[in-house]
Amino acid sequence: MTTDREFDATSTLLAVPDVQNFRDAGVGGLRTGLLYRSGSLSRLTPDGAQRLKDLGLRTVVDLRTAAEIAVWPDERHGLTYRLHHLPLVPDNDGSKPTWPATQAEAYPFMAEVGGPALAGTIRRLAEPDAFPAVIHCAVGKDRTGLTIAVIQSLAGLSEAEIMTDYLRSNRHLGLDQGPLPYTDEHGRPQFAHPVHRDNLGAALARIHDLHGSIPAYLHAHGVTATEIATVGDALRP
Image (cartoon, rainbow, N blue to C red):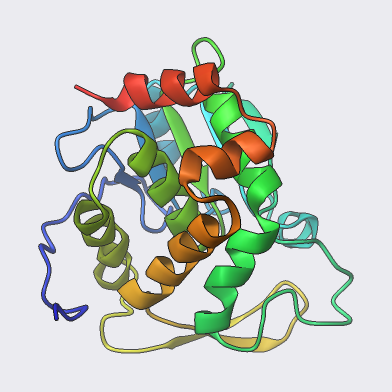
């Protein structure tokens, strides 16, 4: 079995000052320059904003909760893009954990509760002139990882190609040596954990358990066949 360290780690990272894990999701033969993935834009600098302007950015999908955005709002520095706030996990007041206790449990949980956000993301990307687009959460590895995996699947990438791209987050975030500490939006100490192929695999399996396929899962949350085809076709060469 292939381990998480045995994959093509060729960097797809793009230089956007003070934005973590910003990279092109057009991998495995998909079109580049259309769909990007990243951590939040809360520390975006004027130089970084110019870089995004140079990329032609038109759409940003923010998968974070309202509580995260309140503490770490995205910076724009004059950028004029369409912003869509589509929290992948429920908002709460901080009185209970937003996530399950372990990362292994979190991924199936995202599949179970994230249908409206995943569907909303596809619908927004199917709008005219949606691309180039950036999808982000806090650091761009878990919520963003699942969302990008769904989109890449619609564009025809194999699960192996999707996993290769997903695992790049570990190196780009410095998680290839293990978890890193951080403070969450409620002031609680936490650890950011490396991503693992089994976790994303569990989320995709849960989607299939619930609805049989990714398109059927999206259909169940209101996405049309035309919208699915529009997004998939946009990313294919």
